[in-house]
Image (cartoon, rainbow, N blue to C red; front, side):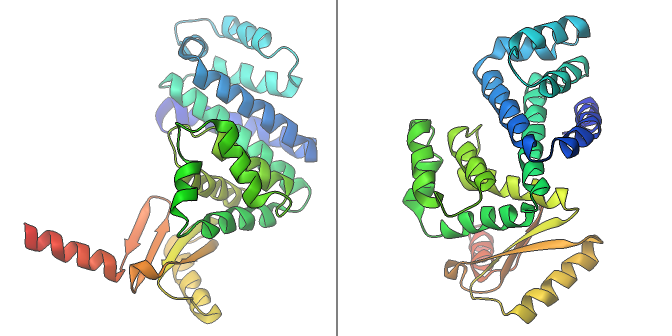
Length: 270
């Protein structure tokens, strides 16, 4: 998110962070209310336009928020009122900002309980458990399937096995696809968790299991490259044959045998 939208989100995060720290574990309720609002915004283009319309007075939009969120926590109402007074490049950016703040709040509740690292690890382990599970991944990302059925599948996979916050986030990833795949959304949640811990996430795919020493050397190399602590998430996928695929944010280094073969095929075809 860039330009005026990026500035508006950053300002909102700075205002909201002290609220989350004061809320402690109650931040989970704030996050769930914000994510409920995201669903309402996704369902109503007219509502999105009304709240993001730069030609409307901020106070008028804040009044609409107060009516819309009647019964919500006053901290959520105050946050969203500030959001609609800000400037957004598009109404979609406003919705995305509410989602990001909602995810921040849910993760802040885990942080307050001292289990943020656990949640981050569990989110990654769910994605790793789906490697090779093509049908399950398709079902969890199929917009034609009722959200309730997707959530039921998540509960079958993780129910009683993970922290409450992890399960809530996995349920959210399944119920509100928002144009993304289930695994992609879980990966984003993990990145937000790592960001709260002031760390980068490096997703590594290897054809074979990396030893602890290999992981430590790779992690140190990436940390030197980016100048920040790194959370290394390693997935084993024999299908890539050999080499490594490393992704840090938008940066991808793919040295797998599979990618080299694909590149050679493209060169021959060209």
